[in-house]
Length: 210
Image (cartoon, rainbow, N blue to C red; front, side):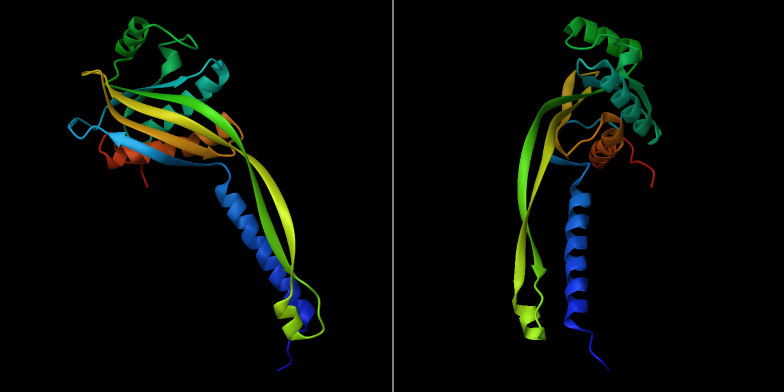
């Protein structure tokens, strides 16, 4: 059986390396993870039946988009969910009295609040290795050329808190990181799925179907 020439192995190896790097990059993009969380061990209520979702931001468009998407994801689990802007039209800080009135008007037994803490710009340098051309197999095997690749991306850190309305106490809290977010509409579905799954494991909301 005739062996493939060194150039063929070189091309295959280079393509494999590039494919691996691309897969890793795409896997990291537009993804959210929970980096820290807490739940009240003494809380025995749940799952909640009606949740009001509030995104704390002055950006009216971003807030409404996020609340609509998150509420829709909650409804998919079989519970009622109310986007906060439907009962609390003001964007930005409001008084505690106004907040309580909005929650009561929504008839919610739980309040989920999401607040963006910060966005950090990160720089990552990776070295790609490509085999050099040599006339023998051993030369091909032993020599590699290094090519640095520089990537810049953002890490968005958010705080998520779930309150039991009846007792007015925090029952679950978490901190999330979203890798290189592109837009609210693009990131919100995945963000909601991550949070809902975490709450479902604690028994605070029903598990998402599937």
